[in-house]
Length: 177
Image (cartoon, rainbow, N blue to C red; front, side, top):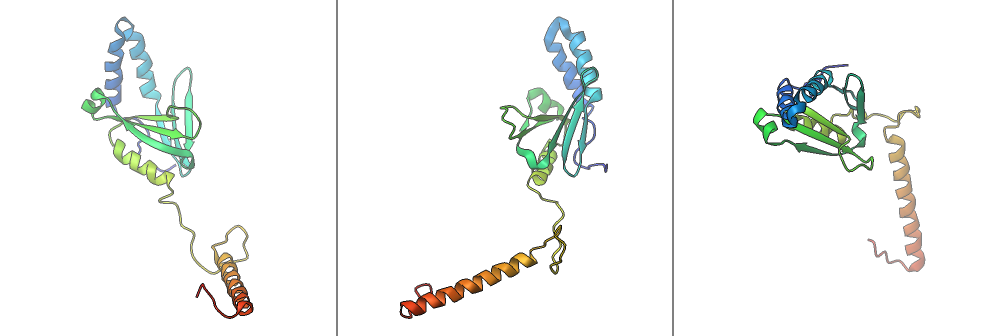
């Protein structure tokens, strides 16, 4: 796997600060929440392949979410006041799975706008390898459109000939001309 310049393999270290600040909100359960969030931060990984993006986390209950770029329907950016203060943002990736919420939430990103743009490009197919133009081959695995273009030209010629015959029978006036 090649390293991706847009999406790092791990979240930014400032995400741990955000998790600790969020754990303070649960009051007396702070130590339990802080430990859970500490392990979530240290086990969180992102991976980008040619086909899609994956996110995994967890110690006792390991979770991994893999989404192909072709399945992505929408991408949202979200950050609350504390996240903006720390320079963080979340990217919510939605698919056509039928659930109202996001299928994947990428957390701990400081370059969240660049990541969003990257995901939009990949979901729309920008950056995919174009099919090389060249003469048509007899390889059924690779048809670059040469045979299709020839068939379309032949069909157009036949339609012109049919139109000429119809015009000739009706008396010589072609309304399409």
